[in-house]
Image (cartoon, rainbow, N blue to C red; front, side, top):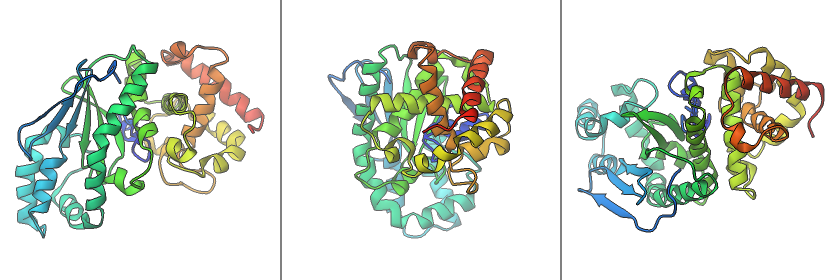
Length: 345
């Protein structure tokens, strides 16, 4: 889910200086976007139907926080959404969870809220169905990740929330700790109910793990760093899910077909902007939605994973997750130069 805003479950919005775990990342990345050495007992604490629901693992490496119950209670109690209702929504829904809603990308103004609530009806049932199964998917995803990477550390909040159509998955920092945000709206809208969400959830966890091993990446907004973050997250996700489809890994079943013949050209263009930071100059490689026929959407994810494959010829995975700075930049350029010179089949 950069990414996994469908510009990336790490949220590539993180590339907008919020956490280049997405983004997503970017993101942010989505920053980031893993630690339960076997869940033996789950304790579920729900103070009331409209409060946050927290599901803790015994090891307390992560906490699943579901703020959707309060949202749905309000939504189901109102048939129309005028200016007065929006103010009530701010008081009853946003204010109690303002620390979480503050992480929604963009301006959460009254008009945006009103339009979102008014247009939500066709998706509401699907979102609520997804919300019921998602905690189980988060647990399965984390457990499998931690089995492969038992050194994952820290305390992470896995937050289920309305994203106001801005992301699938995204990484942020909340009260000094890592948080992975999952937008129930975009996730439900972009996928069928029986979709295998685990690879995309693990894509975000991979971003989080990467940031733990190479904390400098969170302050580096150069394109080579975005390219590497997304590529490494894809590579790790594929190792965890060797039988996953391209749709499950990339959120696209056409990426391979569209990107592969263009790799030499795209690699050449990527090399020109490796140290570029402004989003506008690198969006053509990172964002969801094709910029043009010349730039298939999120080609950086596909090419970044190929870079990771090349790195395995020189580095162990443990070494790969710690690469950053000039050394990483030089290595990415070296591999892209090779890609530029020969067609990858």
